[in-house]
Length: 498
Image 1 (spheres, one colour):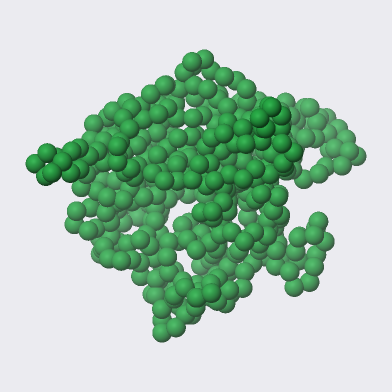
Image 2 (image 1 turned 60 degrees about the horizontal axis):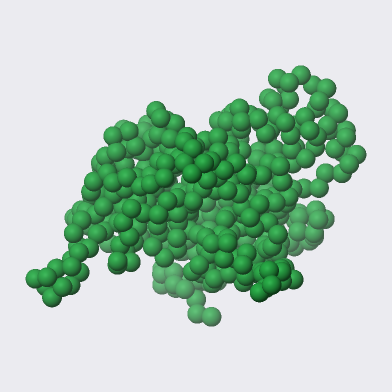
């Protein structure tokens, strides 16, 4: 199969982003000013801009568009540019959520007394501070089937602006992020099926697994990069069952199979067995040429397991110090793993009514380098227990976290205070994705000719899902717990009945 270069991500800005309108006069002035500067200064200015500003600059003039579209600039911007952005998307089991909203969160400008919900005109008593107008689209699982829904029996196109899609057929889950790319999976079995760049709209469909299990079993996976070969790879694991004639032909567990796929090749390759003593494999996180998971071992203790792309081996990874981390009980579900600013972190909320412990590994692979930040909580101060995922380091002493019941929590360690941030404009819950956006094209990043690079804008740009018509804002939420659908009594946070 030959490489298909039909990507139109940068040539069709309107297809994958609703950029701010730049007037013709402003465009002429800005374009004339910038083009008179030396190239070195132009590039230096652009490298300091966040992704939203970069995409707007592409619309200013051909000179800026040429610079920004250069593959060398894309790599430099990802390496040196600001890393303040993250993504959110609605998370409703009854809806197909393919829209990703880019969030450039800066507390200095966000927590102001004015709003921007009506074209920048402040309104009193309004807390919707940030309009999420930079949008990207994820591909649909079966774009061909969706397009056929618009056609009648004579080959014509129905005059329907919106298409009804079923979540079980068209929705993707997110495995993890790596170098500006996202790996997506099915929602039923979590099998990895697509790698995409939300900014450019490009995506690659992964090949079918080498072996299809007769039983529907969960798949554990991770997406990463091996620097020595410049290859992007996906690893997947699943439990294999066989019929046992001695037990009435019942299904019996045989082994845990591990396979790997190198983007640019056309198949999965077996790499032997995965650790069967571990369970869970949650929060796949890429860092330093390896994928890391949070697991539970046979002794009911939480551990970290990593897979190194260099030797294609699974191994245990140094966890935070024992005694403070890893005791298994019903609260183990309140521990998560992630990466920010090149450091691995573990956020442990299992002792929620006393504190939330944030562990950061300052030096990769060195167990003694785990550093603990203890956030004092308590039901009267924090909203509720659950999983707290670290989304962003704001500044020294301040962090932004996502809670699993759909709210963001901004915490300033110096001020010992926190603020709630919610999404307005949609009835759905949302999820936050720690992802650094990139201009790097998939067709330039993937080595090999046995790959077909598609683009979501060229395939499904002519119609919208209903959610894509929503105007979404990010704003400060009410500090009352009941505003989030929860209530507190007797030192216990429970869901409030509706």
